[in-house]
Length: 428
Image (cartoon, rainbow, N blue to C red; front, side):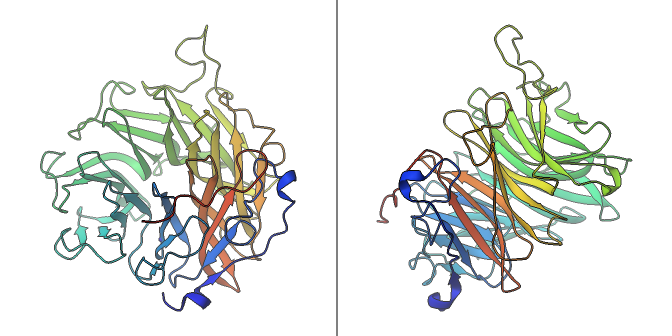
């Protein structure tokens, strides 16, 4: 989200300029070969990644894998760095290094792995927990609270498998449902859409983002904020729910969310003309802490507006784009990653990244005019998640099609001029 290490990892050679000429957005030649690593895990591409304090990288999708800081598979993890079963759409790391994944369908499926890659029997009795919310349910993201409780968000479908309720479930550290949250550990919020990602605020309130209104003509970006007990936070947009039509009547979807240091919420996704007659573009929007769009900041005399009316769209040379992941650098710049192609995931597509300044303008120092693409082989490729390392390097994970087979694909990009990223702290 494994066996025979020698044949499991295929690294692609990418021509790079010498270190002296390296610039922000260039592939990091110290990672894999030429900055790219692909791994045949046996179950498709990657959906999520997390970086450990020691620099190791955990990736979940059609399986689970852990990499050393240089991109090689970690042999301590299940003997060859890969667990071919399990995985999921979301991954989170506990403070003790144990790995939690979430995914599944038709029910929520959550699993916890020990540091060696084996399932943790102290979680749910065998390392896994399945939760039926009463419909066809899909978990999409997971976070771990400071107290060890696990929060999972996704959708409980109610309209012919097309749309449903935002679903949030909280588990105790042993995998049992947390009865102090919602009704028996479960909260359902009717929005007629899909929930794709969540974030935990510093005050432990929970923000879930996705799309609403799929039963209507168009869909809108949707954000919901919950109190720590699962109640809707009425200080957020008046009722806990904020929706925004950011595409002037087109379909717009939020696929990921990140929190700025000042508490503002940055969401990434895509905007697409109704019916899909024209290509979709990256969508980036910023919301204030009260749920309003950041059209001029909270103080119009001090704050700069974000983009146009609080949002930005970005086109990659006329392609069809989706932004699946967003992360915020320590200096406040915003990195967004996804894919660009003729039609996403159906015809040839590539990794696509863009970096923005704090006001939503493209950062001209990154890539070419603030944007870059990375090509694997001819096939359907794209980023599904990204993370910023402690040294500022950008790690993106998703799908790379190699020889017609979908595999885990990772790429690491420089964030500052020159020189490769250090290999990181050696494992204990």
